[in-house]
Length: 469
Image 1 (cartoon, rainbow, N blue to C red):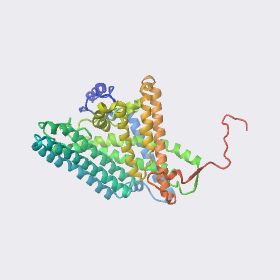
Image 2: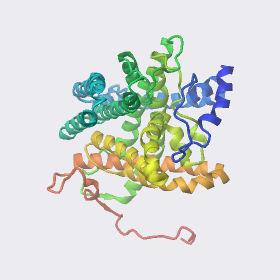
Image 3: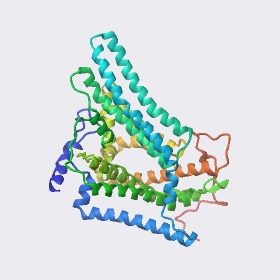
Image 4: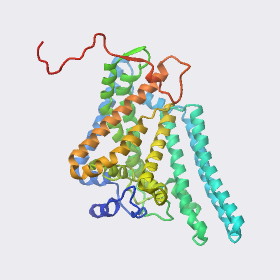
């Protein structure tokens, strides 16, 4: 424990440092035996452990609220299973799509071996070597096209329920990034013909290891702590129910009837927007903990993957650039190594940074569009526009006024998640409740025209400082 803490104190200078999009001097991702920040904090600080307990108590209170309310109101016990069942609807189809994406991904390895075998024969024949090179590129593009295109086409053709669709789409992008990562690692090996290609064992391990950067060897732990694996998966299940309770107790009361009436008062929408701020940020924090801590640590433990630095202490930062690097180191490392760094020499830092943000924002938008069944670029605007604008704004001010800017960042997290948890459900239920129209479109929000938003009759502005009655 003490060694881990000492290591974590020393490593930020190397790992966190001044590395950023635009810093081509930053070394490639290094792997080391180290724990996740929250693991160390929960082990060393009773204060952080109390915060964890508070979130658990909130989950218990939400469970009791659901059970007691439905027992008194409807005479039955509801523990949130109905929302989970609805969210993961048609899970068989989702599983079939996942098997398809996995099969396409596994096809990469025999294709790599076939290409490498042919490479040895045509290496001394320039014309054939050039043709073989283009065939290899075409094969890789075709494989990625099948993985992404077929899955997106199937999900777009027939909508899969929100949670099932999101899980399939996330896996689709995860496996696509894995293919790109190992392909980039194999290109120099194919060119020099001396470094051996990854073995099948290396390839399979990489597919399920919690990293997108390929290495032949990673730091490994000595044994699997199965009790810890079970505990982390129980945390994942707890977060799933957490979000189901938040959806049932905060989202449905505000938005489930949206669109059933032709008119809705603006005050109701404002109340709903602010009413979704707290559940939105709780879901945001729980989602981070579920995916980047519990899920990644569970797989790391099962695969004895030693490097558990899947994120850094993003919650104390006062700069958006630091937040984007620290929030998800797994994806950030992939974007930096395989998108940003190759682009910088040709396009420069500014353009390369924009490309990275645009790709990341579009991937998030595809996930949401396929999950909800419509294109509504709220996250795209928050993440790809305002998030990009905040980079230079907070770059200097965050160093000069760290406390104020950290407060500002948390304010944007609260407001941003409240907007997401309001506008997407509004559009989702408007499409379910509003009458069909010839103008209905996947890309045009229906909630803009149905229902009509109106002010209260005889509404007038009153001066709040006028104390005369």
